[in-house]
Length: 415
Image 1: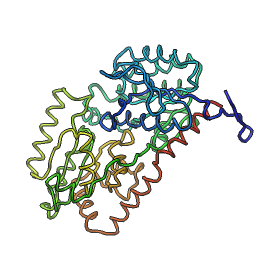
Image 2 (image 1 turned 180 degrees about the vertical axis):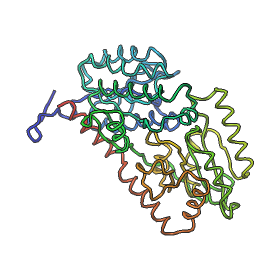
Image 3 (image 1 turned 30 degrees about the horizontal axis):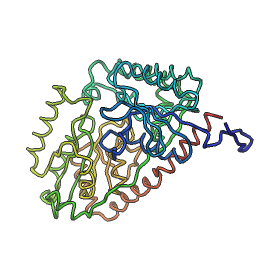
Image 4 (image 1 turned 45 degrees about the vertical axis):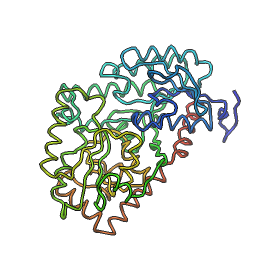
């Protein structure tokens, strides 16, 4: 390998480095927004990194997609399926590349590789990769504060068992991940503090790299988008993302009935069923109750179901304000990143203050939320504050900046 001297430290030359990214990954030719937040993140990261180094992705197998191919200067090896055997499949295929891969970058979300038992096996995957004697970087896309894990949290996420058992499991799993990883990446300072203060992870191991935001691929004139959706002349509120209990949709629906001149508003709840929960009886009942609640409030609350990728630009272009009434924060929200990409102002609940700031947030109260919505449309000063927050997020989340920070971390662990 070629090396260079920087401030007295020998570093590998960038083009000589090969990064092995372990992740779910959208198929070639896909615009990939419909394949989940981690898949979209991995795709953007791999393509950006290919400008600086060699990249091979150990990805999930997909029906009708080749096992190994090269796309946008990124090698993709589709080698594993969700379930108990994924660590062995990834290890076996990584062994074929071990002479070329210099650092492994593994993407983590609790149920990314399967169900509960697959989640428990994730540290074992890191143990197997450690046998190659190569540095391991793990991006934790979800970090749950131990303080929020209570009965309501488990109920909202359709998780059985007792809170203290889940807390112990999360604590043990995260510490094992930190033990095998050479560096952990989170997307916000808030999550770094959670890892250090609550999970006891060594501070020097945790690095903050913002979640990248790609440019919106298609923007439609707002009036035209509203015409397409049949809501011309209305003030359009938008919730976007999979529907789950912790996202606080009951609060948003109730807030709609407190809006003054509510006939001027329409609310789109643009989200499909959560893949992990789909098919569960409790979840189907929750969705039925949610739709019934909305029907009692207004016929201008519209559930769209899953939004196909080609329709996403229409909903975001039509939106005047995007709202995220989450009751708990566990990750950097992919839908919020979409709002940023489309340069749409957004409001968040006050549980997300430490990530998105308090200036554009609201308490978990339907009446308070309705007043904040009205202030956005009627108070020019507040409107400008929300737009300033949006512009700041756009600047901090450019993908070239994310790429450079990530690559600097690779050089650090390699040196």
